[in-house]
Amino acid sequence: MKLNVSDARTPDVKGHHIFSQANIRGISGYSSSNALSFGNKPLDSIAKSTGQTRRQVHQAATNVQSAANRRWAAEGITPTLSDHFGVARDALQAMGLSRADANVLSYMRLRQLNKVGIDDLMATRVWGD
Image 1 (cartoon, one colour):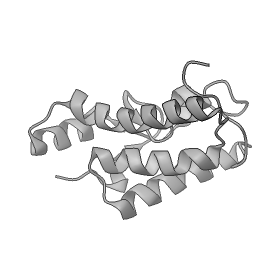
Image 2 (image 1 turned 90 degrees about the vertical axis):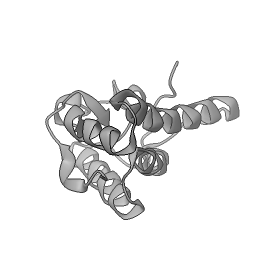
Image 3 (image 1 turned 180 degrees about the vertical axis):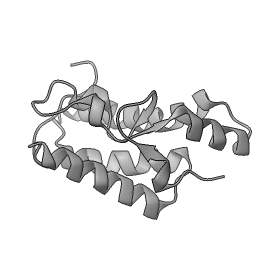
């Protein structure tokens, strides 16, 4: 089973957020209560179909986000929301989405953030800052 665009829900549910909450928390206009995320039920479905646990599926996405944050920190880069787009897409693919669905969901989340006044070029934080 693969995750689909229709599996992403708002408001905030436990599971995996499309853009890392740790990076954008604290930015004016951001609220985790209206964030697109995959809840535990779709994560359980993909875990079952791949012989993994929900935690392993979620961790696959978190690993992609974490690697980007380590790279940004090592290179002294302050990432923008646009930088997070590619990371979000790659993290969703690591969870089992097709590249096309990962692109659509990442774009939907980016536009959702734009609607609340968070610009694509707005600087975000790196994990651990």
